[in-house]
Image (cartoon, rainbow, N blue to C red; front, side):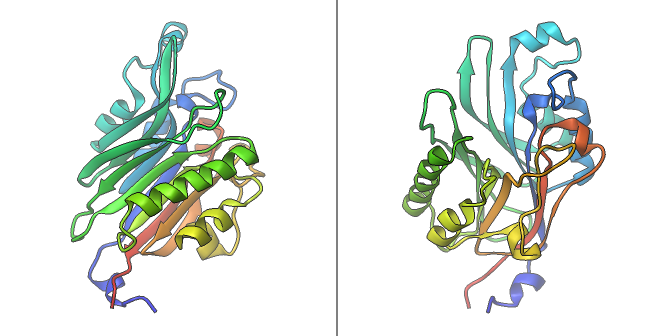
Length: 261
């Protein structure tokens, strides 16, 4: 049983994962960057794991007056007054996009791990460390975006597991969050059992609520896996404004560390 000091000695933190669809509405007709920023400020998480973050898109800057020419992770970081790190996954002639980690607490970027397995989908895992105020140990934060095809995802589960086994201290608090595209709900078995992690929604609700498409969610694609952390609450952000901001819904979890006896 976890040491009970976990709930008394450390203030809980909230982590939120969100695929922001490059700051565009579900059908790419409207720019939603400011709406996303406002909604995230209302959530007020300690740590943000974002996917499909637009580092640059010259075509959309020319097409939409309200599309910012500033990188979205920098824009959100300034708006929220968070530290931020960006991992470029896909690059094209008019720009690039990737994952980002933002934090109100000190953030130490480590690596951007390439988990691409085919030439059509460039994917990555952004590795950072965050030390929450009042905690005496950093949390490893891995922000991930996986492929659409299950055979590809299986290879990526294995790549992520090997990276964690090789690079992460097994005693260190660990968050692995992102868009897993896991509509068949296989990641818990592949990653949870291999790495001794638990999925936050599954741990608190006994099921994986749907997160996609945002307007009428039917598929559970987004995950927050944790290790050496107690999950106190986990939830999907539903309804307005989330249903019109992106094609995914965000997921949040409230966490405290589990300390060795």
